[in-house]
Each structure stands twice: as C-alpha cells, then as structure tokens.
Amino acid sequence: EVQLQASGGGLVQPGGSLRLSCAASGFTRGGYAIGWFRQAPGKEREGISYISSGGRTETVDSVKGRFTISSDSAKKTVYLQMSNLQPEDTATYYCAAKDGDNIYRDYWMWDYWGQGTLVTVSS
Image 1: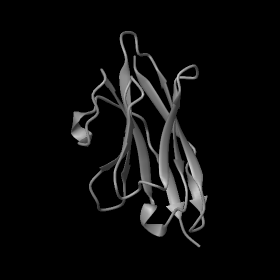
Image 2: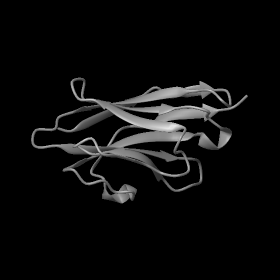
Image 3: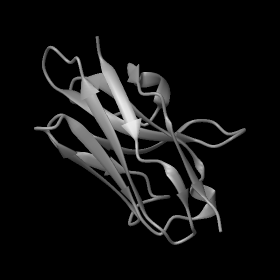
C-alpha cells in the first residue's frame, strides 16, 4: 500500500522559512514522481513543485526563487524548502505521487495523496 506522510507545517511570520517533508513508502515497482500542492480555503488545489523519478524538477512561477524541491532517495523523502513566506502562502500543503517519470501540473492526474500539513503565515 502506497503511503505518503507530509509534515513540517506550522505558523511562521512573513519573511520566514519552513521545510516540508514528504515520506513515501509502499512503492513496489519502478520509479515515481512526487509533487507538492497547496489549497487555501475557498480556492482550488494548485500545483507548486514537482520532482520526477529521474530527478527532473519543475516549480511554478508564482513560487520560483522562494520554494525549492529536493529529494533524499535513501530516506525516500521529498522536501519542499520554503523561504520568504508571505501571507498568501497560507494553505494546507499536500504531497502527491504518481507511478512513472512524468510530471503533471493538474492535481487530478496524481494517484496517491498524503494527509496535508497546514502552513500559516501571519504576524
């Protein structure tokens, strides 16, 4: 059974930083891609940053330069380093996974989801 465990959210002041973690388990064949998404109250879930099984990364323009995705294959964990956080970054952040090497920006293309971790940016 594929499981994703997202963690690392919390309350941070504007301009602060957080690092989210997504621990993956249960993948039994081939590689998989991991994506980070977020959903603010009343808004649609949006993709932020992705990493393929081959290590290719993609980050959306709205957070590029502030958010960085990385992975530790030994720990089967993907990280999202977030810096210069702003109130508009407040949302529940989710990690998702998909078998194979492809990356998709659309959340409905992803197969497996973690439970989400809340990030609140406020003074």
